[in-house]
Image (tube, rainbow, N blue to C red; front, side, top):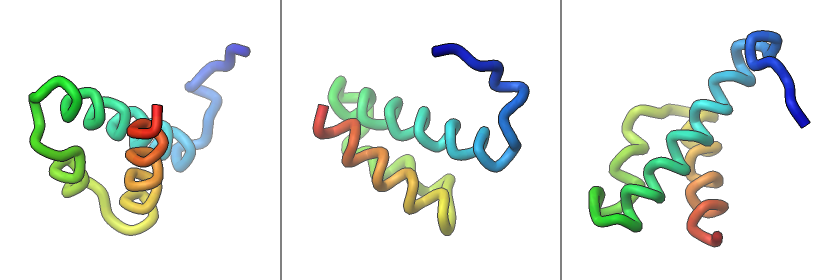
Length: 62
């Protein structure tokens, strides 16, 4: 499945970026570049923080 990210609404783009940030934080955590992925959560507030936390759990389970 492919789609053009330019066609995605800005709010949904922001959530995609939050999910990518969570995946990268877990990668850094696993590779010793970051003590805990929660340290990267300071960039997010409100709903984005909730999405980030759920994404951390999703990527840690993999």
